[in-house]
Image (cartoon, rainbow, N blue to C red; front, side):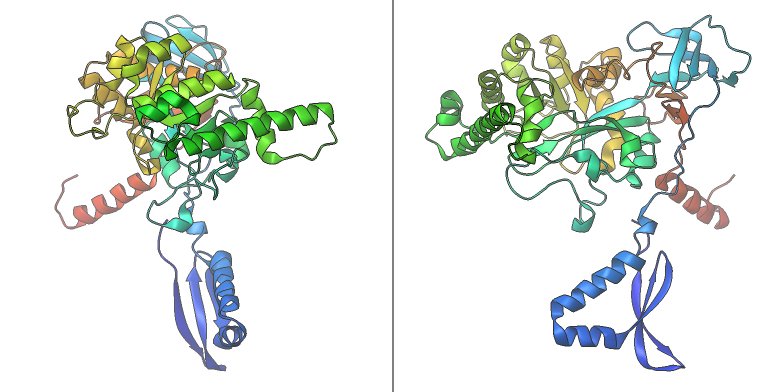
Length: 479
């Protein structure tokens, strides 16, 4: 959001009554006070509705949108020449060339034949990486965590399997240019709230509309697993504890979804129920069940539930995943680590338990990727490479940290055939930086999403330039 709009009294020489003048993104609008007075006499609610109408029509909504223009579709070959190319799935190519044609990677290597019509971009001394993939965020669904009107990540009620995250995604969020300026070009946008939160989507951070920006949807069906004691975990959803009741409700939802599917198969004229219709791909194994769980007992209970329901499972969070690594490895359950910059969950845990989590999962041979942490993490999505860097400082090999934000999330989210590495035939979604991307001092200088060059300007950079000029004029800094 930018400047706040204001309502001020206005007196016109031709009009004796005082009016309300609304100054917002679309200029000044004057509303006679007697309109609101008469409305108030009829109903306070009507007056409030009128005020909200004018706020929506003439308020600051346009100012909330970022001014960066989406990239144009690639219309000619582009060759990046001379950089150190990091395919992620193979060794680094020193002084290599990457050729992009029609939004795809056409060739990568030390000796690439460049078409005469190609645009050559000299990137000697630079590094080329796949665009980072943020595997769990509410970017696009949340603008300012403290402003309720800018939050659209959750629906009311406990069972909302029909929710589609991509439909609510805000393509002009000010947070999008900030994230992609640091190399985050794709985000797994996740709904929240309730027991079954809904379906997530993998979004590209460039485009005019949510339809343009959707790379894959749905990606998964999200369930917020209740915290459990060991007794409840052993008994599953049939435990006598009150904590087992949400699981009974969850099992009931799956039973209802299966009954609905059977009824629809027997008679297609049966009425369509959007909730249970959304569950069918999960029951058929086409869409995984993504369970948000951190405690060991919750993770074990979720794995047992998925086995009973015969559905694919992905754990999101996974704080205690190393404690049940053998189970996760045997059942082939991957883990989306919800950030490394987190505090220990228990008083007796070491301070670095979250920092070491990725390294422990790698050692235990559990498939995993790294996402950013925090409940309201949209504004911190830009820090994804630094979550990976923290894991490097605590035992994770650097090359594995790069994989944890590129090819590993691509595999877990089901898009490894399109993104996550620099290979011929994949989307030309990549970044060019001037150093080690896990270092804070490194800058992302160029970026392409499906061959479209992305504007890396952002609100942060605009404010930096503004206040740099201020201090230059005060002669506090030198050119």
